[in-house]
Length: 509
Image 1: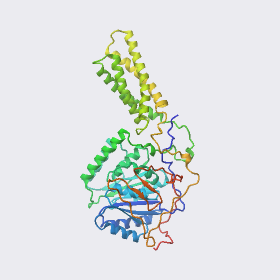
Image 2: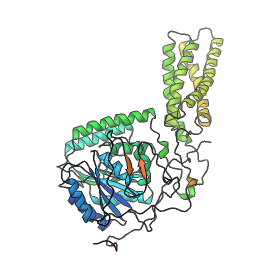
Image 3: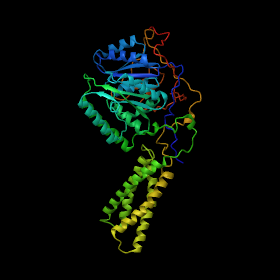
């Protein structure tokens, strides 16, 4: 029996336990490009806020993506003066590229980013990351379009922002309210699996990440924010909007064709440990019935239009067989993607072959009804033929659903669809803590440099300065809880809450 309890790559969400840890809980990334004027006051203001209000250890990472002014020098000075600040230097531009590089290298369980202008009120930072720490959500975003948000910006940017989000809702069926706010956070175990699927390296990076996460069923938490527009922003609105629309088309096409394997992002049924032994969870019968009825209704209309067209130049039997064949292929593809949630090309040929068997059964029912009608009357009216075919198709539809559910799509995770599936029971009983992040300073001059992207724009092999692992976007499939050597580790880490005025004995301050 097919169930929804089969886990994907991600384990169940868990609250990050409060205990001793050698790594920060939160890593806030600030992507910058030629921000020599705003970088220092931004970092100092953010550091002061986190020191006073954030109850866990933290890190601030400056992601300098190919600045040509004195931004790199400013970043190095901040790193030398503030122990919680780290500096990454990339040789190519692109906010998405900078975020992917730093997030992939970070060892913090919670990853966030914000724009250097700090347009968003920092009081929203703790509410942003709290659902991720507690295990309630997978991603969190700040929203300027919530009813309780307070936003100060010009009418031009207001119109563009709302129009863009309407486009996302209409084209990609996005349900989140604000894709462009530069104030987001993600759990690291989610980022390890999600980031390799995100192609964009620029401003569309956020939107693509959110759309894929939402389509995979991950939980996105929204926080209303207070936001004041930066009048000195260097963002090129027209160019950014054009690139965003190209990204919407690319992602929409990939989702429509099923070329993205999002099943690897699914979570097991029940995030409470008590739910993990539940077996044979019903596979969403009510939702499947609704989806099947919608697809069936559209398929019936498609079939009747085809039959009426083919009937103009052929007999009723040939017209019925041809119309049913074409509509059956379309019906199987639509039910595969929309009703039973099977994504990717793996198993598609097998499913279509099984669908043709179901088609043969439907053909026998409808052809038999036409034979019976022709036996009853020698010249039936066209309306009578349609009525008989509708009744026969209704019976065939019910049988088709039962066969789809019990046979064709009995297990939507074919071996080729989810090669990286993880069985939750394989997680170890005793967690293994992550290695502590090294401390770089005068006594550690040989700090590794940031990875550089290749000439073809492909993601590099990330040489992490924070943990002793590497990850290549093109070839490596991350699996939460699994180390590079094949051993299994717990997907969470033990954390130690700190009070704002606690100090490290080794801290020179």
